[in-house]
Image (cartoon, rainbow, N blue to C red; front, side, top):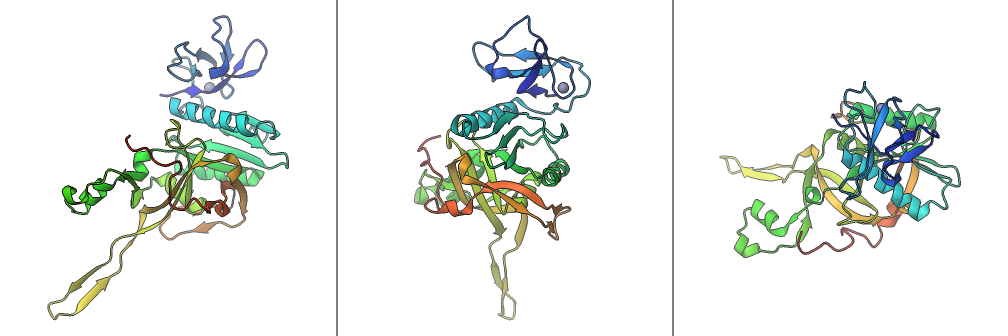
Length: 310
Ligand SMILES: [Zn+2]
């Protein structure tokens, strides 16, 4: 059972502190903001892992349970990125902030000077599709724009040129080229399919290692259509089959890195819609998404240029 938390409440003064930025103090005690049980501060001088808080073993059920250390690290990283770049201009930038009369707590909460409210939610396989839909509806009712962020894994979206050639039955000798190319298709997980439809066929991701991107990564996908086939009947008549559209496989059309926070825009969709093959409908929603007018000049490339060797 994972139970890592980025923040906790310090007992001595009731202040919410961030584990990574709080010195280890054996005299201090902390409690969980969600369940109010005591938590332990973990932070090593060696900085092998991001500073965090964790429940004591055997603590009663807490809604924070289920978050991995990677999730904690990602939300701290996004919080720091926005605070350092735009903190001075924004009205609020707060990690694990209770909002809407303490009914919901996004990973990072932002309020712009014009009063737009933005909830950033990191989704690293901890939540079910139902829970993502429930929160998306809740944010819509509250007038808060939600940005669902997925972890970016380079190898999920890119492959070596020769791997593609090999898959297609070419000989490596003929087609040897070790450059990286976008994969033709990727299989989306259930909750990724929801985000794909809710965010107009785009995914917004975060590269925690910053090997490929300093800001957000935006991936535009489209329905993958299998290759068409044709065959001849015994009578010599040619039959043509159009390729089949897949629900789970999507074509990777564009991958763009270093997308800045201010290149994302808030949108409101007042209507829900359903698709024949989805077991749920995409609800009316307030979202934050990539501003499509910013594609110009970024077409089809991962930026910055990809490294030659992994
Ligand atoms: Zn708790």
